[in-house]
Amino acid sequence: MNKQDIDAVLARIEATETGDGNPRIQAVVNRIVRDLFVTIEDLDIQPNEFWSAIAYLTEVGRNGEWGLIAAGLGFEHFLDLRLDEAEAREGVTGGTPRTIEGPLYVPGAPVTIGSARLDQDEQPGEILFMQGRVRGADGQPVADALVEVWHANHLGAYSFFDPTQSPFNLRRTIRTDADGRYRFRTRMPVGYSVPPGGSADTLLGLLGRHGTRPAHIHFFVTAPGHRKLTTQINIEGDPYLWDDFAFATREGLVPPVTLVNDAATLRAREAEAPFYSIDFDFDLHAARTGLPADRVERAHFEA
Ligand code: MBD
Ligand code: FE
Image (cartoon, rainbow, N blue to C red; front, side, top):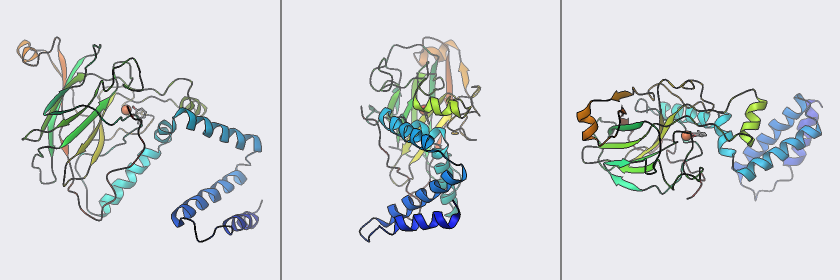
């Protein structure tokens, strides 16, 4: 079909809208429909292809993999880049880089002050201690900040989604102490891969891509008067470090990992074996009006 004929059918469809609709939704939906009509025309999409796409979208809705696909197709990273740009336009630069939340956060983890032990289950994996400070834009430590942390186990599996782990294993909320410090003991995570045979796996396979993330630890850092930080750190040396299917690795989020094996420190930390240690500070921006929303509302799986 030529462009005028496509414009004519789109105009007929849009003309059925009354003033009662939501203008934002009208603008967004009409734009997406237009872009898809043009895609169907340009790529000569056949009816069988269209209906197989509908069946696929239906299946993804049923099996809850939209979050994986949003990450895997790069949408979630793209939204981060747009937030970075919007902040930079307002003069907000520097600080700890943001990176994607991902689909595996579960609200309601136990809260502790200053420190936490995340490996509540008996589980293998190298012991890891991670510690540091939350700081404000002025460089001063922030007391009473909330550091929400969640990550996968030695098999790349997250509690809640993996029913063999107890609820909230490897998930905690730590309130920083008077010096703005947090620390936790956990087990070294291993990279996550999308569920084999699932919708995300099928799609990525058809794209000739893998569905694996490098080992990482997620954080939300919140404190009154500061912008919420959503970020992750990656474990250096992971073969997928710069080949993340979700595009979340960023400069500044790959801290050095040191191995601690002197007997006195092991005893002091009550560690049964040599452990890894990561020092990492979170540098927040000051909250103020005129900046894009930092608290992203999205549906979560609920424990
Ligand atoms: C994850 O653990 C994750 O962080 C993302 C973004 C996608 C899938 C699994
Ligand atoms: Fe993750």
